[in-house]
Image (cartoon, rainbow over all chains, first blue to last red; front, top):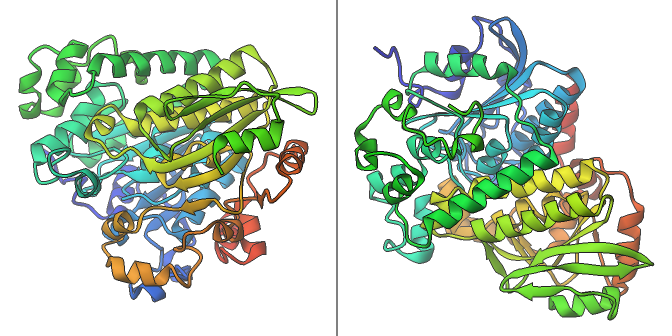
Length: 290
Length: 232
């Protein structure tokens, strides 16, 4: 029985549930009032943390740096201060070498290129980089790209990880292209089960903070190699997956083509039941294979 | 300027760059050395296929021609807004391209970005913005994201965002604002070859964008926030 929904928690509640009890030490906390210089112009009240909490903590006794984005503030849209806090955290990780950087991602997007470079730097330096994606607003845009640069992406079955939101696609190309009100379609195209079955998510969990914490602990020693050989293999697999899908495939058709038996049943299954269905052919796209 | 014009201003006839659909690829001779060119044209909407195509070209250069400089020619309207691309993990393909460029840099390839026409949002994040430094032509157009998309993410009205774009460089389109924010290191004005020569000579690959944004006054707080996090 789940004690709470990870998706429904605030960023700070999630953070507290993931790291060891009372181990979180925040940098630039709300009491420092480091706020966005742009929000006043937008007529939006500032948040004293600009929508992200960053700091150090321990996880199962190991030293980590951690950040949690608040989806309720500007949809987790990454502004100047918010982005700079993430970049500062990643640069500090490169300097101080914690065992891992754990990001609780929830963002509608907006450009985040420096965090992108910073995250890859940390990963290349041998620091495990872990993304926990379970917020109600999903993980999109620049943050969506940053997230997939990490060693490990953990998602819940109700989380979404993508580039453009369905509303943006619908407003550009019509509901015939992507009907943003068709929730089943949206989730089977961008949700955790789909990302798991196609190899874009490394760990699929229930919408449960304890499950996210366990997955984060397991990811502390997981490093995805970033060598020429590893990227060449990723390139081949992504091309293969794209070729298999053809032009018009729906998620269920794609799962079937990839080798998922009874793909039609997937939307009704829980995370545990979906975990065992991932085709062996896509496993090398994810960490840990099985 | 179209890519043919850029290529001939940079290399004269000493190049074999070709466009295949929206993809640009080839090599050129510059100051006696061979450089690899990877990019996009036709204001490409960058989807899974085009991101993977660029990544392949980058990997081929890294695998076969150690140390060869990479010039990224950027012209994109942004990421492709199609259900198929989301289904096939466009964020994964873009991340893959970014990691391939990062590997090239780590292996000693100079990686130079040049926005010669248009650069919008997602099409640009893991190409020009993953370079050692990104440069632009003065007439280029660069935007973080289109106003309607920004309105959806921020839940603010398009009218408000439009009016802000007239006064605040963070919201405004235009290449000068990107220079002021530090996202673009320099404009290549007039003598393009001189711009490329200077970019290739700068072998400091550290990320100076926040610092340059502060020095140039376009991004006033980011560098200071980063410093405070490092000192906290």
